[in-house]
Length: 437
Image (tube, rainbow, N blue to C red; front, side):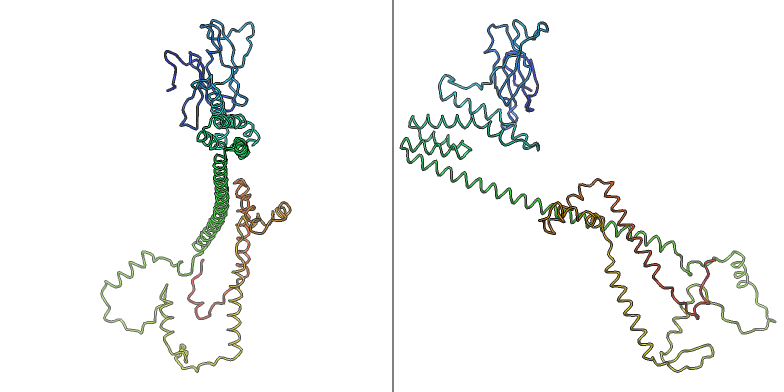
């Protein structure tokens, strides 16, 4: 709820040119929102003090904090302005209600308090993120600094050193503090001048600490950005690796081995086997030596394991004749070593063929342009600026670079598949292989 005057209603409400809320009630009191003091409402003007009659009013057209103007239309005997003839716009000043406004001290205090209130929108702009010229802030602070200097002189002349020191605490600019020290020396208040110099030293130390804190915050932000960029690159690499693994799994699933193409037995074969096992045996049938059944499925490897259990010096063939162990010649040993060397070379080539990420491809293309823009930058700073710009690229363009990196990986994989030689089939095991047809 809005704080209204006694027996009054809301007459006007709006925003100033700088974005601060204002409103006026029917008794003519104008209030503004003070963001510094918990979003409270403070009286800044009284339009009834400028009217001639009791039934006269003012209608607000616009409010400006810089310059301090309250533009209104005078309404004689009415609350709303007439349409014809076209009304004239008048300018009313702001005035904060304080006690003993007839004294010089209260007038200086009112100027200081009013300028502080009407310049608070600059701090609000800073919090939102709007930028403004620093000269505007210095111009708005001039009346308040002049009022403080006059209050200091007034308190010093009246032998109120404690009050003068309090006024110096409110001074924000070092130039005004130096003027206060000079004025105190003229009046031969040496102790007051020494205390003011201590205040100047303390404020300068506080400002230096604030500057150091701001620099540390900037360094922490740069480190956070750098770490975030590294995490983004790692995430992209992990995504690419996951895509590659999925593609490899799909290829292995599509390619079926010879042992997976076994045909299921038909129903007639199953019935015949069951009938033969359950029927009566023929006593007059001549028993003949049964031939070993051909191995099927995984039984092939069972037979191979049995054959491997023989001694390494002899190789058992069908006629079960012992064969002498063949000695390895130096030529065969050279072949083995050559195979090992080729395997090591392949591993080295695979380690060298690392997949390039989308950021690497984009950085290779724009590296010359960045070096022209930043000729004095180091490699680390160049990579940081490149990472920041790569983050600002729209998603569509970034997806194009990711696709290019994937295409490069697919091309390398195809080349490796073409370079892989076909394996020689052992003639002994060729008879046990199943055809895909």
